[in-house]
Length: 316
Image (cartoon, rainbow, N blue to C red; front, side, top):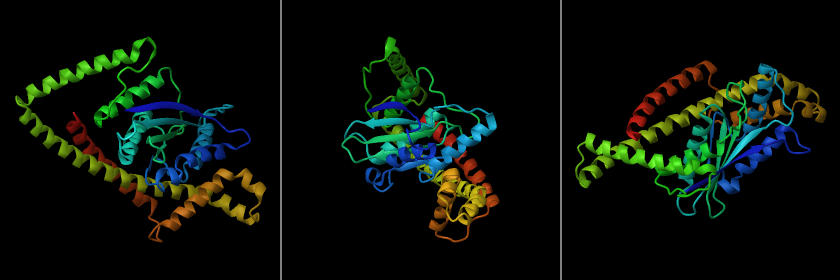
């Protein structure tokens, strides 16, 4: 069973936009709560530099669209809590990642931090309010809470977790959806049994075991591709951020590390320092060429998509 809540994140009083976002993300990825970052995952961003990346995307959004809103939403957070003892930290983070991907449709960068410091394991899923192409802003649409709950319940069923049988929603909307969903599931089950000539429990169990084993093998393979894609994208982002902010950082250094200069260029300086720290953490001192990284990225995405087609068939 998982409980969800969508929260808007605004600029904190007396703090810059960059600091407001960074404080929220830092709380989410707190090493004490996530076992030194073991249960932190992300999509199209790096947890350590996500705040700077989110801020930079907002500036690019304003440049591209010419729109600038006062008191606009900086980011959104999904609180995603599980029933005590029903899910492992690894599973919780995996489910949280899938929930973030489904709810944002892969159009917004996000960080998933699973907190394990309390009895009930829960996720903090923070996603950017600006889309990856920097052309759109997420709109908290009418019925978003219901849509989020529905996606969460579908994932809970997929992972064999319990769901709330009688949640309170206006006009019985959720109850109606649940009834229709259950009827469809029963119809699909009957059709499956007829199609695959499963007339005994033993035949069904054998078929289920074969498909399940293959499903988990493919799922593990996809995760490996996602990991490699994420690592590739992270390096590309840092190379891009480093080159784009290099001149500003040189000017900052020439200014004698002026506080005034820092305040005026805080976002760029944070991104530049993060990129330098990342490069220093690499085992190899040679930074790959961007063209080679892009070719590798395209190959990995194509191979992952091929695996994902098989994954969807097995999931059915």
